[in-house]
Length: 117
Length: 142
Image (tube, rainbow over all chains, first blue to last red; front, side):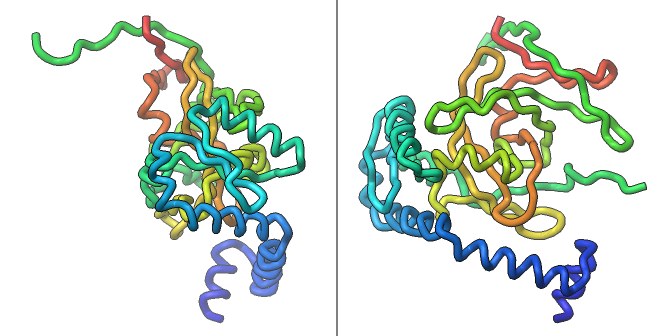
């Protein structure tokens, strides 16, 4: 509760406003889009070890299955456009050996700080 | 003489600094395409060398790029002055200075984002920050 109060104060919110925002986020996580996301992400987790044989290629995942593996972005893009025409807003695209080797941790220093009058 | 010789460059496109609260800041203009190679148009991004990622967008911009998003296990986490920030990550094709570069756009999982270009992309470009004239420019191979 103390953490909630201090974090709310830091963001310029009352504790009740902070709770409202938290509930809104929680409700959004239960939405249809997130369910689809979870399924496609799970497909990647299931194939990621095997997918290393596709190193550098483009793996397209949507609708809970692998839609294809392509040699170029142009080829993958063609498939993604077909999927978007069928109503998919989110498509998972992974380049094994590229996307998974760029590092999961970065830094964002204080460079976006602005003075307050 | 041993070693790589610097290549001649010519001044490419330039953009005026934008007014800040006290100090103006440099910006670059990039044309962005999503993984379906659909054109999002030209976006103005604040140059931010303190941001280690490539491009950050607010969620409203980012949704266009979910046409080629990385799975959650490959999203990136950033240490910032105010704590840890998890970013969604998607593929993007960038056009600038006559070049096309495959890189990534990121957007905070929670909360707003900003339009920033960070070190992961800046380090692939030759840029000139002309402070006295308040202009940021791209240098192209001459």
